[in-house]
Length: 63
Length: 472
Image (cartoon, rainbow over all chains, first blue to last red; front, side, top):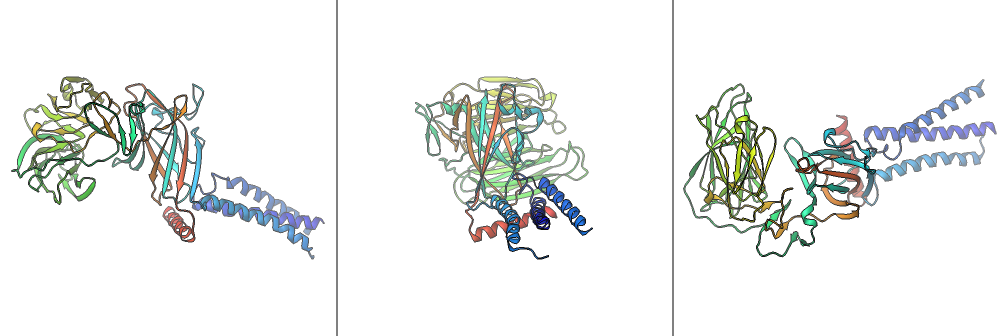
Protein backbone atom coordinates (compact mmCIF):
# COMPACT_ATOMS: atom_id res chain seq x y z
CA UNK A 1 0.00 0.00 0.00
CA UNK A 2 2.88 2.37 0.86
CA UNK A 3 4.34 1.72 -2.56
CA UNK A 4 1.00 2.58 -4.22
CA UNK A 5 0.76 5.81 -2.22
CA UNK A 6 4.30 6.78 -3.22
CA UNK A 7 3.42 6.11 -6.86
CA UNK A 8 0.33 8.33 -6.59
CA UNK A 9 2.34 11.05 -4.83
CA UNK A 10 4.96 10.93 -7.62
CA UNK A 11 2.28 11.39 -10.26
CA UNK A 12 0.91 14.40 -8.33
CA UNK A 13 4.42 15.90 -8.15
CA UNK A 14 5.02 15.32 -11.88
CA UNK A 15 1.64 16.84 -12.84
CA UNK A 16 2.26 19.91 -10.70
CA UNK A 17 5.79 20.27 -12.12
CA UNK A 18 4.42 19.92 -15.66
CA UNK A 19 1.84 22.64 -14.98
CA UNK A 20 4.33 25.03 -13.36
CA UNK A 21 6.99 24.60 -16.07
CA UNK A 22 4.47 25.47 -18.78
CA UNK A 23 3.09 28.40 -16.75
CA UNK A 24 6.56 29.83 -16.04
CA UNK A 25 7.59 29.41 -19.70
CA UNK A 26 4.37 31.15 -20.82
CA UNK A 27 5.00 34.01 -18.42
CA UNK A 28 8.59 34.32 -19.69
CA UNK A 29 7.62 34.43 -23.36
CA UNK A 30 4.36 36.38 -22.94
CA UNK A 31 4.66 38.65 -19.88
CA UNK A 32 1.47 38.99 -17.81
CA UNK A 33 -0.18 36.04 -19.56
CA UNK A 34 -0.25 34.02 -16.32
CA UNK A 35 0.92 36.12 -13.34
CA UNK A 36 -2.15 38.39 -13.00
CA UNK A 37 -4.33 35.28 -12.57
CA UNK A 38 -1.96 32.93 -10.78
CA UNK A 39 1.60 33.49 -9.62
CA UNK A 40 3.52 30.58 -11.23
CA UNK A 41 6.60 30.89 -8.99
CA UNK A 42 5.03 29.62 -5.70
CA UNK A 43 3.38 26.81 -7.69
CA UNK A 44 6.78 25.92 -9.13
CA UNK A 45 8.35 25.96 -5.65
CA UNK A 46 5.65 23.62 -4.32
CA UNK A 47 6.25 21.30 -7.28
CA UNK A 48 10.00 21.37 -6.59
CA UNK A 49 9.35 20.56 -2.92
CA UNK A 50 7.16 17.59 -3.91
CA UNK A 51 9.86 16.34 -6.30
CA UNK A 52 12.50 16.55 -3.57
CA UNK A 53 10.29 14.58 -1.17
CA UNK A 54 9.64 12.02 -3.92
CA UNK A 55 13.35 11.63 -4.59
CA UNK A 56 14.03 11.27 -0.87
CA UNK A 57 11.31 8.59 -0.50
CA UNK A 58 12.63 6.70 -3.56
CA UNK A 59 16.16 6.68 -2.10
CA UNK A 60 14.83 5.30 1.20
CA UNK A 61 12.93 2.51 -0.53
CA UNK A 62 16.05 1.64 -2.63
CA UNK A 63 18.19 1.31 0.49
CA UNK B 1 5.76 -4.66 -9.16
CA UNK B 2 2.44 -4.88 -10.90
CA UNK B 3 0.17 -1.87 -10.17
CA UNK B 4 -3.60 -2.36 -9.84
CA UNK B 5 -5.89 -0.75 -12.42
CA UNK B 6 -7.61 1.46 -9.83
CA UNK B 7 -4.25 3.11 -9.05
CA UNK B 8 -3.76 4.11 -12.66
CA UNK B 9 -7.31 5.46 -12.71
CA UNK B 10 -6.57 7.49 -9.57
CA UNK B 11 -3.35 8.84 -11.08
CA UNK B 12 -5.31 10.32 -13.98
CA UNK B 13 -6.74 12.82 -11.48
CA UNK B 14 -3.61 15.01 -10.89
CA UNK B 15 -2.83 15.05 -14.60
CA UNK B 16 -6.42 15.99 -15.43
CA UNK B 17 -6.23 18.81 -12.89
CA UNK B 18 -2.95 20.08 -14.37
CA UNK B 19 -4.38 20.04 -17.89
CA UNK B 20 -7.60 21.69 -16.69
CA UNK B 21 -5.46 24.41 -15.02
CA UNK B 22 -3.62 25.03 -18.28
CA UNK B 23 -6.93 25.13 -20.12
CA UNK B 24 -8.21 27.72 -17.63
CA UNK B 25 -5.13 29.88 -18.27
CA UNK B 26 -5.62 29.44 -22.02
CA UNK B 27 -9.25 30.58 -21.73
CA UNK B 28 -8.11 33.64 -19.76
CA UNK B 29 -5.68 34.52 -22.57
CA UNK B 30 -8.00 33.60 -25.43
CA UNK B 31 -11.57 34.15 -24.18
CA UNK B 32 -13.96 32.60 -26.75
CA UNK B 33 -16.24 35.67 -26.59
CA UNK B 34 -13.33 37.96 -27.57
CA UNK B 35 -14.09 40.23 -24.63
CA UNK B 36 -12.16 40.50 -21.40
CA UNK B 37 -13.07 42.91 -18.61
CA UNK B 38 -10.50 43.90 -16.01
CA UNK B 39 -11.78 45.77 -13.01
CA UNK B 40 -9.00 47.67 -11.30
CA UNK B 41 -9.54 49.68 -8.12
CA UNK B 42 -6.99 52.48 -8.45
CA UNK B 43 -5.06 51.73 -5.26
CA UNK B 44 -1.70 51.04 -6.90
CA UNK B 45 -1.96 47.25 -6.50
CA UNK B 46 -3.47 46.31 -9.84
CA UNK B 47 -1.42 44.17 -12.20
CA UNK B 48 -3.22 45.77 -15.15
CA UNK B 49 -2.86 49.52 -14.69
CA UNK B 50 -0.16 51.57 -13.01
CA UNK B 51 -0.60 54.74 -10.92
CA UNK B 52 -0.33 58.13 -12.59
CA UNK B 53 3.07 59.85 -12.74
CA UNK B 54 5.07 62.10 -12.29
CA UNK B 55 4.99 61.95 -8.52
CA UNK B 56 5.05 65.73 -7.99
CA UNK B 57 1.65 66.08 -9.70
CA UNK B 58 -0.17 63.27 -7.90
CA UNK B 59 -0.60 61.74 -4.44
CA UNK B 60 0.51 58.20 -3.60
CA UNK B 61 -2.16 55.72 -4.66
CA UNK B 62 -4.11 54.05 -1.87
CA UNK B 63 -5.94 55.48 1.16
CA UNK B 64 -6.30 59.25 0.92
CA UNK B 65 -6.67 61.81 3.71
CA UNK B 66 -10.39 62.32 3.22
CA UNK B 67 -11.12 58.59 3.53
CA UNK B 68 -11.35 57.25 0.03
CA UNK B 69 -9.03 54.97 -1.91
CA UNK B 70 -7.47 55.99 -5.18
CA UNK B 71 -5.14 58.71 -6.43
CA UNK B 72 -5.52 62.50 -6.47
CA UNK B 73 -4.17 64.47 -9.44
CA UNK B 74 -3.27 68.12 -8.92
CA UNK B 75 -0.88 68.81 -11.82
CA UNK B 76 -1.12 68.65 -15.58
CA UNK B 77 -0.48 66.47 -17.54
CA UNK B 78 -0.03 63.06 -15.89
CA UNK B 79 0.66 59.69 -17.44
CA UNK B 80 -0.06 56.05 -16.71
CA UNK B 81 0.30 52.75 -18.50
CA UNK B 82 -1.87 49.66 -18.70
CA UNK B 83 -0.83 46.15 -19.64
CA UNK B 84 -2.87 44.58 -22.43
CA UNK B 85 -4.06 41.02 -21.67
CA UNK B 86 -3.30 39.78 -25.20
CA UNK B 87 -3.91 40.76 -28.79
CA UNK B 88 -7.02 42.96 -28.91
CA UNK B 89 -8.43 45.46 -31.40
CA UNK B 90 -10.07 47.94 -29.08
CA UNK B 91 -10.22 48.91 -25.44
CA UNK B 92 -13.11 50.59 -23.67
CA UNK B 93 -11.95 52.48 -20.60
CA UNK B 94 -14.42 53.32 -17.85
CA UNK B 95 -12.90 55.74 -15.34
CA UNK B 96 -14.47 56.69 -12.02
CA UNK B 97 -13.38 60.21 -11.16
CA UNK B 98 -14.32 63.24 -9.07
CA UNK B 99 -13.46 66.71 -10.44
CA UNK B 100 -12.74 69.35 -7.79
CA UNK B 101 -12.77 72.95 -9.10
CA UNK B 102 -11.75 71.57 -12.50
CA UNK B 103 -13.84 72.44 -15.54
CA UNK B 104 -12.25 70.29 -18.22
CA UNK B 105 -10.63 66.84 -18.17
CA UNK B 106 -9.41 64.79 -21.13
CA UNK B 107 -7.92 61.30 -21.33
CA UNK B 108 -5.77 60.30 -24.27
CA UNK B 109 -3.82 57.39 -25.62
CA UNK B 110 -0.20 58.27 -26.23
CA UNK B 111 1.07 57.16 -29.63
CA UNK B 112 4.28 59.19 -29.67
CA UNK B 113 4.91 61.50 -26.75
CA UNK B 114 7.95 63.24 -28.32
CA UNK B 115 5.94 64.13 -31.43
CA UNK B 116 2.93 65.11 -29.32
CA UNK B 117 0.79 62.37 -30.89
CA UNK B 118 -1.85 61.84 -28.22
CA UNK B 119 -5.38 60.79 -29.16
CA UNK B 120 -7.41 62.71 -26.57
CA UNK B 121 -11.06 62.01 -25.71
CA UNK B 122 -13.33 64.30 -23.71
CA UNK B 123 -13.99 63.13 -20.16
CA UNK B 124 -15.47 66.10 -18.32
CA UNK B 125 -16.63 69.60 -19.23
CA UNK B 126 -18.42 71.32 -16.35
CA UNK B 127 -20.41 73.87 -18.43
CA UNK B 128 -22.06 71.04 -20.38
CA UNK B 129 -23.47 69.59 -17.13
CA UNK B 130 -25.94 72.50 -17.18
CA UNK B 131 -29.33 71.15 -18.32
CA UNK B 132 -29.79 74.13 -20.70
CA UNK B 133 -27.50 72.13 -23.00
CA UNK B 134 -29.49 69.48 -24.83
CA UNK B 135 -27.62 66.48 -26.24
CA UNK B 136 -28.15 65.98 -29.99
CA UNK B 137 -26.39 63.80 -32.54
CA UNK B 138 -22.83 65.08 -32.79
CA UNK B 139 -22.89 67.48 -29.85
CA UNK B 140 -24.99 69.80 -27.71
CA UNK B 141 -27.27 72.76 -28.45
CA UNK B 142 -29.11 75.38 -26.44
CA UNK B 143 -31.76 77.93 -27.24
CA UNK B 144 -30.31 81.37 -27.67
CA UNK B 145 -30.96 84.58 -29.51
CA UNK B 146 -27.65 84.65 -31.35
CA UNK B 147 -25.74 81.85 -32.95
CA UNK B 148 -22.24 80.57 -32.64
CA UNK B 149 -20.60 77.19 -32.79
CA UNK B 150 -17.84 75.70 -30.67
CA UNK B 151 -15.90 72.52 -31.20
CA UNK B 152 -14.20 70.03 -28.85
CA UNK B 153 -12.46 67.04 -30.41
CA UNK B 154 -14.73 67.11 -33.46
CA UNK B 155 -14.57 68.29 -37.05
CA UNK B 156 -17.19 69.92 -39.18
CA UNK B 157 -17.91 71.10 -42.67
CA UNK B 158 -18.24 74.86 -42.96
CA UNK B 159 -19.24 77.20 -45.76
CA UNK B 160 -16.34 79.20 -47.19
CA UNK B 161 -16.18 82.01 -49.73
CA UNK B 162 -14.78 81.25 -53.18
CA UNK B 163 -11.90 83.68 -53.58
CA UNK B 164 -11.00 85.27 -56.90
CA UNK B 165 -7.43 85.02 -58.18
CA UNK B 166 -4.98 87.33 -56.46
CA UNK B 167 -1.31 88.25 -56.89
CA UNK B 168 1.34 87.07 -54.43
CA UNK B 169 1.51 89.40 -51.45
CA UNK B 170 4.26 89.39 -48.83
CA UNK B 171 4.02 89.93 -45.08
CA UNK B 172 7.12 90.59 -42.98
CA UNK B 173 6.97 88.53 -39.80
CA UNK B 174 9.21 87.03 -37.18
CA UNK B 175 7.55 83.78 -36.19
CA UNK B 176 9.44 81.13 -34.32
CA UNK B 177 9.14 77.32 -34.58
CA UNK B 178 6.13 75.19 -35.49
CA UNK B 179 3.16 76.95 -37.09
CA UNK B 180 -0.04 75.83 -38.76
CA UNK B 181 -1.40 77.90 -41.64
CA UNK B 182 -4.95 77.56 -42.93
CA UNK B 183 -5.83 79.13 -46.26
CA UNK B 184 -8.46 79.25 -48.97
CA UNK B 185 -7.28 78.91 -52.58
CA UNK B 186 -7.64 82.07 -54.69
CA UNK B 187 -8.62 81.51 -58.31
CA UNK B 188 -8.12 77.76 -57.84
CA UNK B 189 -4.46 78.15 -56.81
CA UNK B 190 -2.66 78.29 -53.51
CA UNK B 191 1.03 79.07 -53.09
CA UNK B 192 3.16 80.00 -50.13
CA UNK B 193 6.75 81.24 -50.08
CA UNK B 194 8.33 81.25 -46.65
CA UNK B 195 11.62 82.97 -45.85
CA UNK B 196 13.21 80.71 -43.24
CA UNK B 197 16.30 81.29 -41.15
CA UNK B 198 18.15 78.96 -38.81
CA UNK B 199 19.39 81.29 -36.06
CA UNK B 200 21.61 78.56 -34.57
CA UNK B 201 21.10 79.47 -30.95
CA UNK B 202 21.61 75.74 -30.55
CA UNK B 203 24.52 74.72 -32.80
CA UNK B 204 23.76 72.39 -35.67
CA UNK B 205 21.43 71.77 -38.54
CA UNK B 206 17.68 71.74 -38.06
CA UNK B 207 14.99 69.89 -39.97
CA UNK B 208 11.85 71.50 -41.33
CA UNK B 209 8.95 69.18 -42.00
CA UNK B 210 6.16 70.44 -44.28
CA UNK B 211 2.79 68.69 -44.22
CA UNK B 212 -0.14 69.71 -46.38
CA UNK B 213 -3.73 68.76 -45.62
CA UNK B 214 -7.04 69.27 -47.35
CA UNK B 215 -9.51 69.18 -44.51
CA UNK B 216 -8.36 66.23 -42.40
CA UNK B 217 -6.67 64.38 -45.27
CA UNK B 218 -2.92 64.67 -45.69
CA UNK B 219 -2.11 65.36 -49.35
CA UNK B 220 1.59 66.21 -49.22
CA UNK B 221 4.66 65.82 -47.09
CA UNK B 222 8.26 66.96 -47.40
CA UNK B 223 11.23 67.39 -45.08
CA UNK B 224 14.44 69.29 -45.59
CA UNK B 225 17.43 70.33 -43.57
CA UNK B 226 18.26 73.92 -42.87
CA UNK B 227 21.65 75.14 -41.64
CA UNK B 228 24.97 73.27 -41.43
CA UNK B 229 25.93 70.72 -38.80
CA UNK B 230 28.55 72.98 -37.22
CA UNK B 231 26.92 76.32 -37.97
CA UNK B 232 26.93 78.86 -35.21
CA UNK B 233 25.43 82.33 -35.42
CA UNK B 234 22.74 83.55 -37.75
CA UNK B 235 22.30 81.35 -40.83
CA UNK B 236 21.32 82.63 -44.27
CA UNK B 237 17.68 83.33 -45.10
CA UNK B 238 16.37 80.64 -47.46
CA UNK B 239 13.13 80.71 -49.40
CA UNK B 240 10.86 77.68 -49.35
CA UNK B 241 8.10 77.75 -51.93
CA UNK B 242 5.10 75.49 -51.48
CA UNK B 243 2.62 75.05 -54.31
CA UNK B 244 -0.37 73.36 -52.75
CA UNK B 245 -2.00 70.80 -55.09
CA UNK B 246 -5.49 72.29 -55.13
CA UNK B 247 -8.07 69.75 -56.26
CA UNK B 248 -11.22 71.29 -54.90
CA UNK B 249 -12.59 74.24 -53.06
CA UNK B 250 -12.11 74.14 -49.28
CA UNK B 251 -9.64 74.81 -46.52
CA UNK B 252 -6.03 73.80 -47.03
CA UNK B 253 -3.73 73.40 -44.07
CA UNK B 254 0.04 73.82 -44.36
CA UNK B 255 2.02 72.82 -41.30
CA UNK B 256 5.64 73.87 -40.88
CA UNK B 257 7.06 71.67 -38.13
CA UNK B 258 10.44 72.78 -36.86
CA UNK B 259 12.07 73.60 -33.57
CA UNK B 260 12.35 77.10 -32.10
CA UNK B 261 15.78 77.59 -33.69
CA UNK B 262 14.12 78.24 -37.05
CA UNK B 263 12.41 81.58 -37.68
CA UNK B 264 9.95 82.51 -40.41
CA UNK B 265 11.03 85.96 -41.61
CA UNK B 266 8.34 86.56 -44.22
CA UNK B 267 5.29 84.87 -45.69
CA UNK B 268 4.22 85.47 -49.29
CA UNK B 269 1.01 83.97 -50.57
CA UNK B 270 -1.64 84.42 -53.21
CA UNK B 271 -4.37 83.53 -50.68
CA UNK B 272 -6.75 86.32 -49.83
CA UNK B 273 -7.85 84.52 -46.69
CA UNK B 274 -5.30 82.81 -44.49
CA UNK B 275 -4.86 82.42 -40.77
CA UNK B 276 -2.45 80.89 -38.27
CA UNK B 277 -3.25 78.94 -35.18
CA UNK B 278 -3.85 77.87 -32.57
CA UNK B 279 -0.14 78.44 -31.79
CA UNK B 280 1.46 81.75 -32.72
CA UNK B 281 4.99 82.48 -31.56
CA UNK B 282 6.32 85.99 -32.09
CA UNK B 283 10.10 85.77 -32.06
CA UNK B 284 12.64 88.44 -31.26
CA UNK B 285 14.82 89.94 -33.97
CA UNK B 286 18.11 89.97 -32.04
CA UNK B 287 21.00 89.65 -34.47
CA UNK B 288 18.69 90.05 -37.47
CA UNK B 289 17.39 93.57 -37.15
CA UNK B 290 18.33 96.58 -35.04
CA UNK B 291 14.96 96.60 -33.32
CA UNK B 292 12.14 94.14 -32.71
CA UNK B 293 8.83 95.20 -34.24
CA UNK B 294 5.67 95.06 -32.12
CA UNK B 295 3.60 91.94 -32.64
CA UNK B 296 0.12 92.57 -33.99
CA UNK B 297 -2.52 90.05 -35.05
CA UNK B 298 -6.30 89.83 -35.32
CA UNK B 299 -8.12 87.00 -33.64
CA UNK B 300 -11.48 85.56 -32.66
CA UNK B 301 -9.88 83.89 -29.63
CA UNK B 302 -11.54 84.55 -26.31
CA UNK B 303 -9.09 82.56 -24.20
CA UNK B 304 -5.37 82.86 -24.74
CA UNK B 305 -2.34 81.60 -22.89
CA UNK B 306 0.78 83.77 -23.07
CA UNK B 307 4.33 82.78 -22.25
CA UNK B 308 7.72 84.32 -22.85
CA UNK B 309 11.11 82.78 -22.38
CA UNK B 310 13.23 85.96 -22.19
CA UNK B 311 13.31 88.95 -19.86
CA UNK B 312 13.05 91.17 -22.97
CA UNK B 313 9.61 89.66 -23.55
CA UNK B 314 8.09 90.81 -20.24
CA UNK B 315 5.32 93.22 -21.23
CA UNK B 316 1.61 94.00 -21.19
CA UNK B 317 -0.27 92.06 -23.88
CA UNK B 318 -3.71 93.19 -24.96
CA UNK B 319 -6.52 91.61 -26.92
CA UNK B 320 -9.51 93.85 -27.58
CA UNK B 321 -10.35 95.67 -24.38
CA UNK B 322 -8.56 93.34 -21.98
CA UNK B 323 -4.89 92.97 -21.21
CA UNK B 324 -2.55 91.15 -18.89
CA UNK B 325 0.94 91.79 -17.70
CA UNK B 326 3.40 89.00 -18.40
CA UNK B 327 5.75 89.58 -15.48
CA UNK B 328 7.75 86.35 -15.31
CA UNK B 329 9.48 84.18 -17.88
CA UNK B 330 8.66 80.48 -18.38
CA UNK B 331 5.23 80.87 -16.79
CA UNK B 332 1.93 80.74 -18.68
CA UNK B 333 -0.35 83.76 -18.20
CA UNK B 334 -4.02 83.41 -19.19
CA UNK B 335 -5.74 86.25 -21.02
CA UNK B 336 -9.50 85.80 -21.17
CA UNK B 337 -12.18 87.92 -22.82
CA UNK B 338 -15.48 87.71 -20.98
CA UNK B 339 -17.45 90.08 -23.23
CA UNK B 340 -19.99 88.85 -25.78
CA UNK B 341 -18.28 90.73 -28.62
CA UNK B 342 -18.14 88.48 -31.69
CA UNK B 343 -16.13 90.83 -33.93
CA UNK B 344 -12.41 90.31 -34.53
CA UNK B 345 -10.15 91.73 -31.86
CA UNK B 346 -6.63 93.06 -32.22
CA UNK B 347 -3.88 91.30 -30.30
CA UNK B 348 -0.84 93.44 -29.50
CA UNK B 349 2.43 92.47 -27.83
CA UNK B 350 4.61 95.63 -28.08
CA UNK B 351 7.91 93.81 -27.48
CA UNK B 352 7.01 90.62 -29.44
CA UNK B 353 9.02 87.62 -28.06
CA UNK B 354 5.82 85.94 -26.94
CA UNK B 355 4.20 82.54 -27.42
CA UNK B 356 0.44 82.80 -27.76
CA UNK B 357 -1.94 79.85 -27.82
CA UNK B 358 -5.57 80.70 -28.47
CA UNK B 359 -8.85 78.91 -28.74
CA UNK B 360 -9.43 80.56 -32.11
CA UNK B 361 -7.36 81.67 -35.10
CA UNK B 362 -4.95 84.52 -35.83
CA UNK B 363 -4.64 86.63 -38.97
CA UNK B 364 -1.71 88.94 -39.57
CA UNK B 365 -3.98 91.44 -41.35
CA UNK B 366 -7.62 91.91 -40.50
CA UNK B 367 -8.87 91.44 -44.09
CA UNK B 368 -7.13 88.05 -44.37
CA UNK B 369 -9.04 86.52 -41.49
CA UNK B 370 -11.46 83.66 -41.91
CA UNK B 371 -12.49 80.85 -39.62
CA UNK B 372 -11.27 77.47 -40.88
CA UNK B 373 -13.02 75.71 -38.01
CA UNK B 374 -15.14 76.78 -35.06
CA UNK B 375 -13.34 77.89 -31.91
CA UNK B 376 -12.06 75.14 -29.65
CA UNK B 377 -13.57 74.79 -26.22
CA UNK B 378 -10.93 75.23 -23.53
CA UNK B 379 -10.93 74.96 -19.75
CA UNK B 380 -11.63 78.72 -19.58
CA UNK B 381 -14.60 78.60 -21.97
CA UNK B 382 -17.99 79.64 -20.72
CA UNK B 383 -20.00 78.68 -23.80
CA UNK B 384 -23.38 80.01 -22.65
CA UNK B 385 -21.86 83.31 -21.52
CA UNK B 386 -19.89 83.68 -24.76
CA UNK B 387 -22.89 83.29 -27.02
CA UNK B 388 -22.10 79.75 -28.15
CA UNK B 389 -25.28 77.89 -29.02
CA UNK B 390 -23.88 74.72 -30.56
CA UNK B 391 -20.95 72.58 -29.50
CA UNK B 392 -19.79 69.85 -31.84
CA UNK B 393 -18.23 67.15 -29.73
CA UNK B 394 -18.25 63.38 -29.19
CA UNK B 395 -18.49 64.17 -25.44
CA UNK B 396 -21.12 62.16 -23.58
CA UNK B 397 -22.06 63.40 -20.14
CA UNK B 398 -20.51 61.01 -17.62
CA UNK B 399 -22.76 58.90 -15.44
CA UNK B 400 -23.23 60.35 -11.96
CA UNK B 401 -22.36 57.95 -9.14
CA UNK B 402 -23.22 60.30 -6.25
CA UNK B 403 -21.02 62.32 -3.86
CA UNK B 404 -19.48 64.15 -6.81
CA UNK B 405 -18.18 60.97 -8.43
CA UNK B 406 -18.72 60.23 -12.12
CA UNK B 407 -18.02 57.38 -14.50
CA UNK B 408 -16.84 58.31 -18.00
CA UNK B 409 -16.36 55.80 -20.80
CA UNK B 410 -14.21 56.10 -23.88
CA UNK B 411 -12.88 53.76 -26.56
CA UNK B 412 -9.46 53.55 -28.18
CA UNK B 413 -8.23 51.48 -31.09
CA UNK B 414 -5.27 49.22 -30.24
CA UNK B 415 -2.24 48.25 -32.26
CA UNK B 416 -1.79 44.46 -32.15
CA UNK B 417 1.93 44.82 -31.37
CA UNK B 418 1.27 46.75 -28.16
CA UNK B 419 2.10 44.91 -24.94
CA UNK B 420 0.96 47.93 -23.02
CA UNK B 421 -0.86 51.17 -23.63
CA UNK B 422 0.20 54.56 -22.36
CA UNK B 423 -2.45 57.02 -21.27
CA UNK B 424 -2.25 60.75 -20.61
CA UNK B 425 -4.71 62.65 -18.47
CA UNK B 426 -4.95 66.36 -19.14
CA UNK B 427 -6.61 68.81 -16.78
CA UNK B 428 -5.61 72.23 -18.14
CA UNK B 429 -5.52 75.08 -15.64
CA UNK B 430 -5.71 72.72 -12.65
CA UNK B 431 -2.78 74.38 -10.89
CA UNK B 432 -4.07 77.94 -11.42
CA UNK B 433 -7.46 77.16 -9.93
CA UNK B 434 -6.02 74.87 -7.16
CA UNK B 435 -8.19 72.10 -8.50
CA UNK B 436 -7.86 68.33 -8.39
CA UNK B 437 -9.14 65.24 -10.12
CA UNK B 438 -9.65 62.17 -7.93
CA UNK B 439 -9.49 58.76 -9.60
CA UNK B 440 -10.76 55.69 -7.73
CA UNK B 441 -11.34 52.96 -10.32
CA UNK B 442 -10.61 51.90 -13.88
CA UNK B 443 -12.51 49.22 -15.72
CA UNK B 444 -10.75 48.13 -18.88
CA UNK B 445 -12.77 46.11 -21.39
CA UNK B 446 -10.74 44.72 -24.27
CA UNK B 447 -12.51 43.64 -27.44
CA UNK B 448 -11.69 41.50 -30.45
CA UNK B 449 -13.98 39.36 -32.61
CA UNK B 450 -15.39 36.23 -30.98
CA UNK B 451 -13.04 33.29 -31.37
CA UNK B 452 -13.50 31.29 -34.54
CA UNK B 453 -10.81 29.00 -35.93
CA UNK B 454 -9.58 31.75 -38.28
CA UNK B 455 -9.65 34.37 -35.55
CA UNK B 456 -7.83 32.06 -33.15
CA UNK B 457 -5.14 31.45 -35.76
CA UNK B 458 -4.84 35.23 -36.41
CA UNK B 459 -4.40 35.90 -32.67
CA UNK B 460 -1.86 33.09 -32.23
CA UNK B 461 0.18 34.39 -35.18
CA UNK B 462 0.22 37.88 -33.69
CA UNK B 463 1.18 36.49 -30.27
CA UNK B 464 4.06 34.55 -31.86
CA UNK B 465 5.10 37.67 -33.77
CA UNK B 466 5.12 39.64 -30.52
CA UNK B 467 7.23 36.94 -28.79
CA UNK B 468 9.81 37.04 -31.59
CA UNK B 469 9.87 40.85 -31.48
CA UNK B 470 10.32 40.79 -27.70
CA UNK B 471 13.16 38.23 -27.82
CA UNK B 472 15.14 40.11 -30.49
